[in-house]
Image (cartoon, rainbow, N blue to C red; front, side):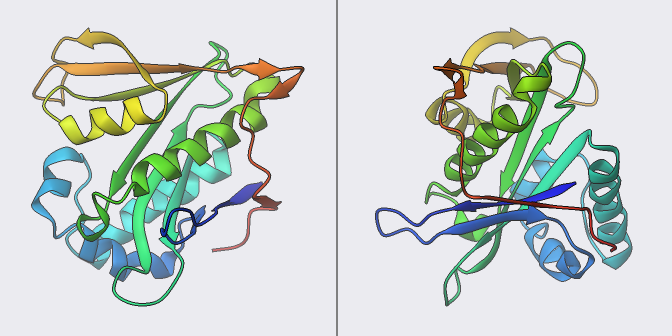
Length: 204
């Protein structure tokens, strides 16, 4: 299966759509990765069409396997700020340990407007609502200690700092482990989103 998640507009901010990555996202992906900060914080840089194809293939395979569910975050509206603004991912949501992991990045032109926190909050609700019944109870979020912006996003979306991790290759600095626990209220997932469209995985 695959899914499309919708984030309503609020407080003057436009709505967003979270959808699986497509091959025709390659040009926008290359443009996003021109940002030096993106290259600093990510392990799979994208410089050209060949890099983009490899990057996108990893995302396609993740949906096919069901263990790496990566969404392109597309802002709705008109003008320079519309289009691709972020990536969010949930990894291993069906793990027997009951633990999954989330990650994200934001395009340079979209930073400072709550894009990452809004998208991550929607992703988190969807992940717990979709996989909680199968045993997903915790989501982990990891980032390097010197990535202060990522730390703020984690805290804003309810991922509490759990531990400081030692240096672990390929990461060159210690890390923060943030954790968010699945909460149910009266048998229903807390904050579960209703803005979800699920469908069979399409041909690429």
